[in-house]
Amino acid sequence: MSAAGKLFAVAALVEGVTWAGLLVGMLLKYGTQTTELGVWLFGRLHGLAFLFYVVASVYVGVRQRWPSWALLLALLAAVPPLVTVPLEWWFRRRGLLSPLR
Image (cartoon, rainbow, N blue to C red; front, top):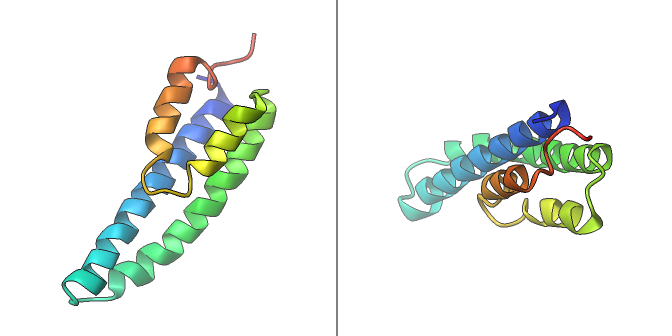
């Protein structure tokens, strides 16, 4: 995996983990009505992770010379919860994160 590919993998994982934390926080806030701390903390963390993922996706897409469909898919994957991680796995299998030849 290229250095840019590793950056994308980290960004995808961080975005996915913070999404999961935010979902647990929302369950605690709205489902069990026990605490708002999870939403407060993971809302902020996920906001930063989302921005990091978007910037990393654009950077890696340009650096790795992704086709436009791959960059668009990477950006769209940040919207539904927990999609960035399986997308990163798929991109890795397709060779989109490998060093350029």
